[in-house]
Amino acid sequence: MLVEVLILGAVALVVWLLFFKEDENPLDKLPGPPRKPIIGNSWELFQSPPDKLLDVLVDYTKKYGDRYVFKVMNLRVLHISGPSDVEAVLAHSKNIKKSAPYQFLKDWLGNGLLLSTGAHWHRRRKILTPTFHFNILKNFATIIEEKTQDMVKMLKDKKGEDVSLMPMISDFTLFTICETAMGTKLDRDQSSATVDYKNSVLNIGMQMLSRITRIWMHNDVIYKNSPQGKEFAKTLSVARSFADDVIMDRKAQRAQNQGVEETESSDGIGTKRRLAMLDLLLEAEEKGQIDMEGIRDEVNTFMFEGHDTTAIALTFGLMLLADHEDVQDRIYEEVENILNGADHVTMSDLADMKYLEAVIKEILRLYPSVPFIGRDIDEDFKMGDLLVKAGTTVDVHIYELHHREDLYPEAEKFKPERFLGNEMKHPYAYVPFSAGPRNCIGQRFAMQEMKTTLSEICRNFKIVPKVKGARPRLMADLVLRPVDPIYVKFIPR
Image 1 (cartoon, rainbow, N blue to C red):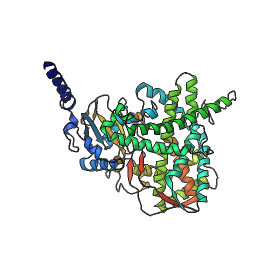
Image 2: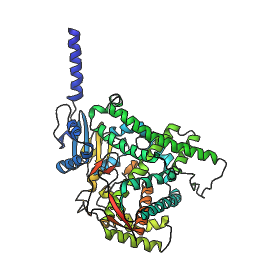
Image 3: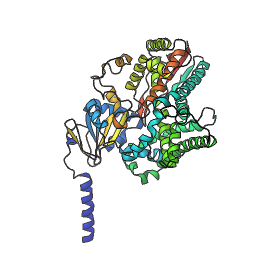
Image 4: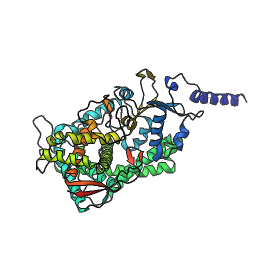
């Protein structure tokens, strides 16, 4: 009897320590949705369908303001959307660890650049940074333009029919990232592999979001043995095998080209495809700096981040341009004046397209490809007057930040002139590529690709909406997505 009493007492003590006994925490003074005993706000998460979660979070920001706390069991999640708070989090040199939900992607992205932290992250970032050196981006320009011209020809064949944007643009960005960063052509492959891969990325996002909102599925053992976890494993198999094929294809090409000397520029930065990202990784493997598993992690990371985020931005961008003929015409005039009849666009030409750059910035303000970023706090730090303790999770709400009326008057309107010569009200008021030490390594590549694509499309077509003023419902999984298809017409000029 005494043993049973002691066991019961021990269990009660553990429950009390886990759920009831807590140190005072400054975050508890912040507003937030009402919490239930023990489970906190877990029920709100469970009640939110994946395609409604973004709406719920936006509504909470409107209701509770720039800072509010969401509690899940004994974990505090601080949600922020004020520029000074965003700076305090993103600019911190040590609190760079991605939040726990990102770990649900570990079976896919491993210890790649998106998920890794600490010294491991620093080593990988150093290996990969030369991929996006200006001289390398110059060599990518020809490939990006070729892919854009292929898309222009395809759109001319549509003869003004309605085009569903996301499937077409996703093909374009996937082919482009594979031929530039991976050095591998995909568009000659007529198999279903690319379609299966794109669908797998979409499914991974939905499956991850579903898991986040079901607290009991956070445990790996429970999840992997559940029907949902087994379905996720099948999806991962498709995504990983596609990336493995890309790696093996490039390795075979390198083996065939052994002994063929490739040119290098005078500053030692390789030209042509020699320093494509995958080549850099394979060279690092030969030097013992990375193993094949590490290469696989980085390729999976860049295949996803290098095509899906840019495809989303271009899709929303073409939707907005279709509704604003005046903006299209101004882009057309700028491009024609800069190119002056030339057939090919150069990096210098792209740099001169200041109005187009403002248009792209406004697209990314309204529809940031990554609507929020999560950080696990490893070290206490001050966020203005607020102490944020280690063990907290902070979610940076980029979408809400970009829609603040105090920073962007008439925030819901598409007004590219916001970014023409006006100083930002705060250096962290606009962070579509994140900021600070974990900013997006490929942001210059993304801007180059978007500028080339939109300039060529506006040069060749007038873009017309299927339904003027129509806007899709939005959801956020791995990226911001339209729930409904977006259709426009491309009318040759």
